[in-house]
Amino acid sequence: MKTKIKITSLFFLLALFTHTVFAVNDGGYTKERDVRSEYKEFKDHHLKDNHSFKIFYYKTGNKKKYISFPLPVIIYSEHGLDVFMSSKFYNEKNKRVSHIIDDRIYKIDKKSEKIKATLASGKELKVIDFSITKNVVLILLCIFLMLFVFIKMARSYSKNPIPSGAGRFLEPIVLYIRDDIARPNIGEKHYKRYMGFLLTVFFFIWFVNLFGLTPVGSNVTNNIAVTASLALLTYIITTFTANKNYWGHIFWMPGVPTPMKLILAPIELLGTIIKPFSLMIRLYANMTAGHVVLMSILGLIFIFQSWLGGTLSFGLAFALCLLELLVCALQAYIFTMLSALYFGAAVEEHHHD
Amino acid sequence: MEKLITDFSLGLFFWQTLLFIVLVVFLKKYAWKPILSAVEDREEGIKDALASAVKAKAEMESLNADNERVLLEAKQERDKLLKEARETKDYIIKEAKEKANIEADRLMSSAKEQIANEKIKAITELKKTVASLSIDIAEKVLKSELKDKSMQEKFIETTLEDTELN
Image (cartoon, rainbow over all chains, first blue to last red):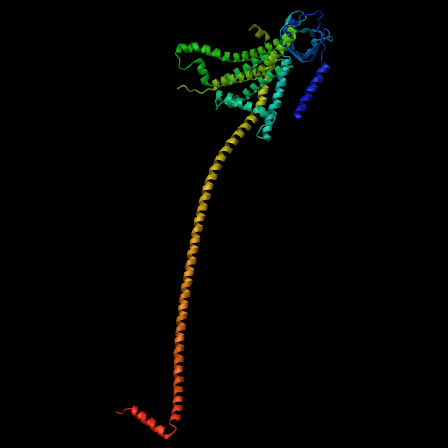
């Protein structure tokens, strides 16, 4: 009960904050545009990362009003670090404008939603964007949620050996990862070392995927950078915990003729990179595809604009949402499972002779 | 592929990597370790509890067997005691009877002896009394018989007739 109140008050605060800083954007569309291209733009926009947290917009007349709040922009270039709020990119009429610091002109590219910088001299400036974007906010939210839930769960064990509350639901999943993913794939001897990463990666992917299904969040795993980071961690852990036997199998495959060994070495070496690469692409592609299809089906409502199209699209979208719920957990499972498999190969004991 | 590279955001990659590593470290220390150790402790506890239950059952069984054995022994002991008691009783009764018989015999014989003695005494007394009485009677008879002279002579004659002199 107590947590419910806490969460409700958090949302209330969030809502308050949103209302005080929300930006009203009139969009500036004077001429009527066709629904199809507008929806396509909306869909593409939704699937992209964003520098401000837009929750939704509504139209009054032909003006768009955005309910959103700004996020900090952190830009690193050879001129040093520039930090400002993303609201600087909009003027009081909510038109997109450039933000100028000294001789550096920053503006958001409308198509890619990325920050472009030019110097006053007109020369383009190379920047690295470390902004707290919408996806970073969602990652942070997910992290806080996970810390809250799991530390609370861990604390509950000190009072009672039987889990209570959320732990009752999460403990079987934790045990499943331990008994059906880590133990059989990595082996009884080594699995404990990898449990921290496997559990975290599973729940992180699952939670951000579920966040992606809510109307508020764009999906974090839709970004190749996120899946690349996760896959890279798997690769690094595999490489740094690998034993002699693992490297032996890569560079000098036992039990095959010497010419074959020479051929196999580069293939196996490439395989070590392809494995995490496939992890990255699989998660990214599955989640993105799900969202693209879901949004396209929802778009049918606006394109058909008839009771048949609307109903059909709603039904399909509902079914797909249910499927996506499954995919969210499935992708998290596959990522964890394959990571465990790679870790298992890295620490496998020698048993050929 | 082209799209993947242009979509790649270094900033997001940086934040994701940093935050995720921090998350792994924190969760490992404050969540997974206590959760997994608690679960393992619980599993150990369940295993131990099961093992001790099996042990307790075996103990119970042996205890039951023991109990039965003790009961049997107790029964045997009781039977033995009862038997002994019975034997003692019989012996005591028998002995008492024997003693009583002997005593009775003794009493009887002494009574008989006494009676015999008394009888002899009585007979002797009687004899004495009879003798003195007969003497008295004889005296009296003689006195009355031998009152006159003829009678005395006749008596002497009869007596002399009976007595043959040799």
